[in-house]
Image 1 (tube, each protein chain N blue to C red):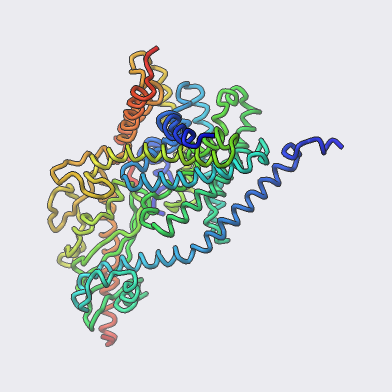
Image 2 (cartoon, each protein chain N blue to C red):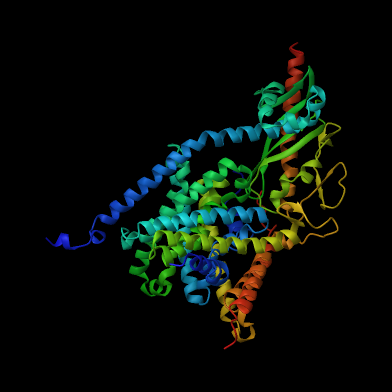
Length: 195
Length: 199
Length: 229
């Protein structure tokens, strides 16, 4: 299409942040943002998984599904690719970064159902990106998500919980903070001319 | 097993959005119009009820280490069925929902109910649990969409309610409003229904 | 043998066969479902495409052929209307000439441009002199629902009805005015909060029509000079 991959990369991080603009990847975002270290670890894992699966799914779709007229299987194929790749990531982390592996615990396999990754793949198909564009979009999307979760983790670590009404503690205040962040990120729109 | 109790439990007491904080992604994305919310809720309920039923049916034969993969596969299959149905009979709505119907596959609610209930309970009860969770989810969607569509467009389900004198609140159409409205809903429910008090 | 004491789930290859079997069943079901609905979905897309195109000239057509506009656009009649009144040409580009009862009503073009999030496709109907827009509609876009996606709303489309596109031989670039304002000849109303999408529409019209109109005109000049008209 017409959009420069680098522009897409920047857009995916700032002007169309996969979490703050498209609302994808909220579940693990809200749960893991209570500690900066685990937020960082999860963010890095998501960047890794998103970028590589974007490329693999692009290849699977255009090189296998389309030539054989199997497009209707795309959702199943993608989710299996993502699941398999997350499994691979899990094994690698267990071997090379065991502390992170144990901190993340259940949230590592839950990356499989992280809407952000699935969403990146679906958007890249709908907008008919090329392979390079998909790579840029996947990388940007992952970084955008990681950025958002780090921001929230940082904010939450400085929060004086006692000042917040009881009913709002935890999820409620996280949602409000995210909403304000989403408003702030809107200020980025226009700096990148996605034309 | 008391069916209505199961239904009430998963719909209200253990509501996905306000209690378990699951399924937030789609709640924020499709709630700018009530019609889209309704279609999304019904599609999710369909997929959830049937996948819970199926997962429960084969729960004694499912090996532990591929449990999540099998669940994902079954959920994906039913969501695709719903997607094909929408494309065939309601193509306009299918277009306006875009990729969000496909994203039901990664909606934490389905995996959550599968793990929490369907993996350990009989099929029919699992289906009721699924129906309940779906109902609760749709309810929250409609509540948020009610506020967003009314103040953002002046309409409800496309029917004009507020006249031309109403200045539309653009923020209601955009991303952040959904965050705030959901937060307020959670606050309200936590205070009035669960009666959480400072310890 | 030890094997008999181990329950079936724990045996080594069982998970693999289980997944293969499960996948096969569901893929088969989906395949059946898909193939049974495939044709219908394709037909619907064609029908939607044709309906949108006929819609562009529906008002003029209904006056010329004395058929009620609603009847013309009904699913049963629209395909026939399309094949009767819309003649496709492929040189120098793909476009449709709309003729009824011996009268040339105008031309219909399928144009595309970059939106904020992906390609936007639209139909623009032009008067025979290629100066005014008869009607304009975006039939495919991936813009933000509730914001950029509002390009498909009727108020946005209506402002292009009978709008001057070419003045003194030059295609206009429309500038944006707020949604509440009344646009002048060189202006179009934008969607509040969706400036980029709105200016993409303006750019698309300018770029495409600036490219297309000279091609059409040179073809007619060639046809005339070759004595075909």
